[in-house]
Length: 134
Ligand SMILES: [Zn+2]
Image (cartoon, rainbow, N blue to C red; front, side, top):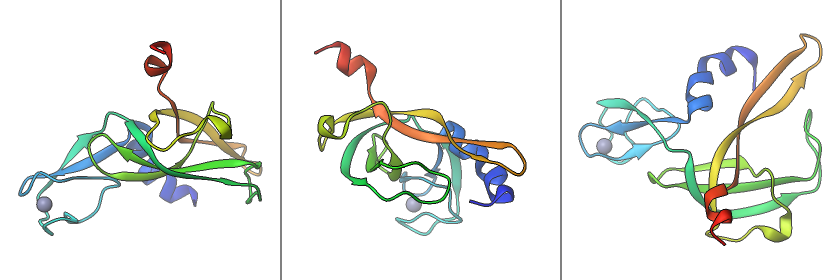
């Protein structure tokens, strides 16, 4: 992601802010011009809980620029409904299950060496209170 785009989206990514449609009530993430369900443009900001469940996941063994493999990529179904693709954190590949409860955490994603600019972003980890209850 280029830096100007990162800055523009930072609020949404740090707080996982989505949108709620005033017309039909659908919640979506990330922000868009119009509602995916009914195309209404009457959308309001909606902070999301950051909690969800693992809908699907995969382990990527090849790295891509600025990231060290392996990466555990998952599709998370947020409790408000939207799906978000993100890396999993604080979990071993063999511990991951479909339907596992997860929560968003902010992690250092990469460091852009020339500017020394550190990019933080969201990942998801197993929900701590769920683990404590086992
Ligand atoms: Zn709508």
